[in-house]
Image 1 (cartoon, helix red, strand yellow):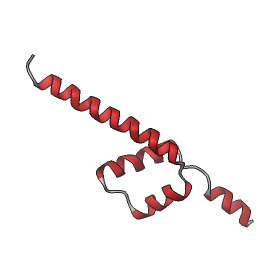
Image 2 (tube, rainbow, N blue to C red; image 1 turned 30 degrees about the horizontal axis):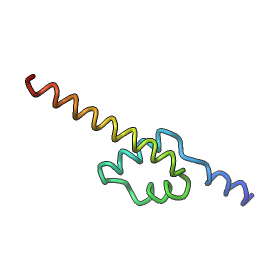
Image 3 (cartoon, rainbow, N blue to C red; image 1 turned 180 degrees about the horizontal axis):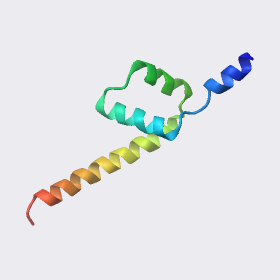
Length: 72
């Protein structure tokens, strides 16, 4: 029984949860409970990939806004 509990706790969080955690980390509002869950169950590579994609989207958005606002 204890072995089944250990296996269920070791399951990687779903993509939606990883995206929410990375977004919260970007804004600095990650709760301690979620941070502990991410460090114990999450895979480092998933957070790095989602984080890099988030940075690329953020920079692309800023570039697009600046190009719309500044006259050519």
